[in-house]
Length: 79
Figure 1: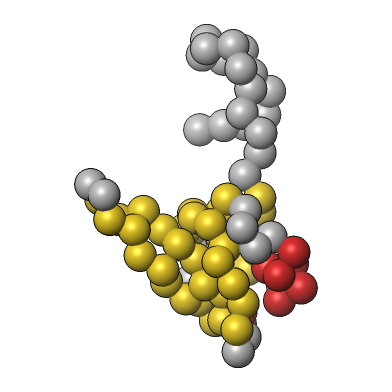
Figure 2 (figure 1 turned 90 degrees about the horizontal axis):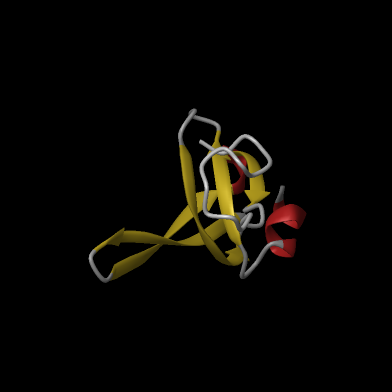
């Protein structure tokens, strides 16, 4: 998981945590077995959170947007 996180630095990702929760943001870095993720809070505020690699089940890069503007016309299971 550490190697995967390092390869996704600077990318928008979804992170599945071992406790069943999920978070999304931009991976800013990986240090001392922790992944640092910039997340949106509210209004104009962002904050960097860090998650231990041992508490991460998976990290997935965001898929590309499908242009077209209509509902139900893209590909993939987007909810």
